[in-house]
Amino acid sequence: MDKHVRSTSVTGLGAALAFALVLVTAGPAAAAKHEFDMTIEDVKVQVADGLKYHVFAFNGQVPGPLIHVAEGDDVTVHVTNLTSLPHTVHWHGLFQKDNWRMDGVPSITQKAIEPGDTFTYTFKAEPSGTMWYHCHVNVNEHVALRGMWGPLIIDPKKPTDLEKRVTRNFVLMLSGWDSKYADKPGFGGLPTEAGQMDYFGLNGRAFPGTQPMRVKKGDVVRVRLIGAGGELHEMHTHGHTFWVTHKDGHPLPQPYKADTILLGPGERYDLIFEADNAGRFIFHDHMDTHVTNAGKYPGGIVTIVEYEGVPTDDDWYVWKDKVYDPDFFYTESLEKPYGMYDHAEFKGEPVDKGRRGRK
Image (cartoon, rainbow, N blue to C red; front, side, top):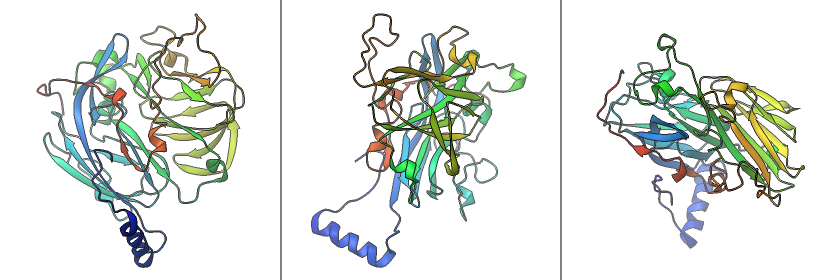
């Protein structure tokens, strides 16, 4: 049982009776209930060699924990603010029907969560698709610079035929970083502050500190792209074309094939391709400056599709000695039962909460 999940369970005959009771009283579409605890913490994450960044991190990590539920489920999240600045959580893409107070916008749907306080969000997980959550206080800084975002994946009641074929899932959250404000919490992200992103990240890390997307020949691969920062990105695959199947979580009536897709802030696209060309192929942002670290190439938003059985021991291969993290793209977590999942490799180092920046 995940440590963030509050629930009870029954086994054996009791479970069978409970299930039968659900069918009788609620019908076949009875919603599951999930209850999670989440914190917001001041930590520093290693974006790239030479760049540690002070972030306001959900559960102390960037990206925040994966929340994976089914369409129609009832979700409760208790959010405790352990930082020195106010925050909220917006559940980006959710309808919040007859539930507008849970939309997470300060001074419009709620009072921001003050330092030390807890706010409880309750909502129905709808619609289905690739969604995400993020702070809605000073989004120019908290979201664009401070890593206050995480994936929210809602499985559909009626998946499309293409979705049913998927055997491998990857979540890619794209963002930028302005190194001038790495140690200035409460500042940055405004045009008046002459900010300019000079690092770019994939799930909070810049190449070569990212990870490979490992597949087997014959896999049907789903890539969930999430524009978590304030920049445009143009993701391009080598060696494959993909079906663009979903936009902002919604299935497209006419999926189309491409090898490059433009992604704006807040947008999500789901891409599905067949792993039918064994080798090692780059998958990268085609905005040229986005594959640099402080102006030096290569860096930024780059991963590599590595096929099982293809050697990685060439002396000149950039990831020859890479220590593999199989859950960097939440691939393993998405195969687990519904719940909320942290990832230890995304955790940052705690920093002093006493420094108070601009609200």
